[in-house]
Amino acid sequence: MICGFDYGTSNCALGVPQDTNVQLVPLEGKHTFLPSTLYALDRDLITEFVARQLTSTVTRQDYVASRRNALTRAQRARREEDISDSDQTLFFGRAAFEEYFEWPEEGYFVKSPKSFLGATGLRGEHINFFEDVVAAMMMNIKARSEKALGTEVTHTVIGRPVNFQGLDSEASNRQAIDILTSAGKRAGFKEIEFLYEPIAAGLDFETQLEKNMTVLVVDIGGGTTDCAMVRMGPNYLGKTDRQDDFLGHTGERVGGNDLDIRIAGKHLMPLFGMDSLLKNGLPMPTQLYWNAVTTNDVSAISLFNSMETKYQLEQLRVDAAQPKLLQRFLKLREEKQNFHLVRNAEEAKIALSEAQQHRLILDYIEEGLEQMVDREAMAQSIAPPLEKMLQLMNEAITQAGEKPDVIYITGGSAKSPVIRQAIQDNIGNVPVQDGDHFGSVAAGLTVWAKRLFQ
Image (cartoon, rainbow, N blue to C red; front, top):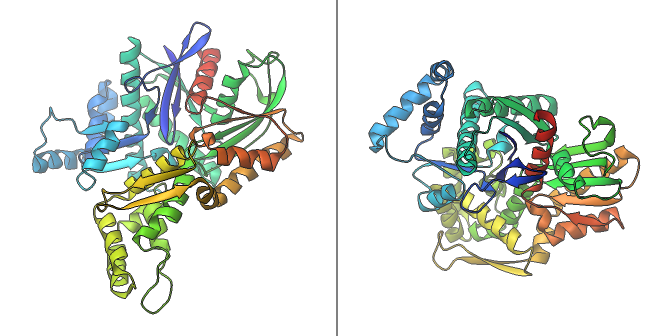
């Protein structure tokens, strides 16, 4: 069976053809999307999980040879932690969040690994590890899908952003595609193709059009914002070569995660001493706080977790005018609750799509700790990344040399009325239409998979 696979930064979804339509496969209960999260009892058990799932003897032998050190460490972890072969060692999606929230200090938690795939300067062992993380997640999603469908899924089109990273984008894109391809092959896909995510979202929209139009497709994903100006409509349906129909496309590594980080930094980090003063009247250094919440940057998180940062925070606690706030920050770092904090910021962003105010309860940090966030204040805090998103939209329009007839927006963060209003204010009197914010990319990928493989 063929499928469209949206391996997203925030969520994953998989679609399959159903007569003339597309069916999104339930991946977790009735949910057709699965949060892009993984929790392992030990980091090296991720590699062990992949090795155990490989079905080809030759592939497994080659893989074991390339991961010998990690697999040896996995066996040691099993002995030291008394983990039996029958114990569940990896958790995915909402279950991964639950395990992390309950045991943040005990295991290894990763959220949005897609954000890291194009990172520059990765050594070979880092690339191997990201391949293993992605392969484990793909294996899990493929197995869930096949269980729900009752048949094997063999051919797939996987979505990709226009650019995985802003710097040295060609090399970053090649590295990320290589990781996704290797992981997909290990997961058991026999044929893998890729398609730009905004184009995929547009293909889903095109099936609904009754006349030909020029559409600005805006896909605000968790890790990237991608835009495409596309001629589409009844005259274009069924074409397999659409190169001449795409009038312009842009993409950059700025997405929903960046909005969450800004909300966490501006509204939650002050509870831990950001914007407070030292005893000498000078302001508290802020980079430590941004490192804590920049969960889509490997180097920032590594620095926050380093002993250097621990010693620096301990000294700042001595020098702080409000040492209690720094003590709270030290506790957050020690208990690895920074991912939880950014998750709270994401919850606020989602809640403020409907409400004007939202109260965040942070009692996992300290009893009675909470923070109120309102929509207007959130809009101010997310202004820098939102401005970058608007620049990408205008650049795509400039490339096309004409204004769009309609703007089609998709992606989880696109539900925010703050973002929708900013688009209308910036681009002008152009109708804005919402897609399925979580499923349109997977649906479009499935439409393309039908054209390629059937």
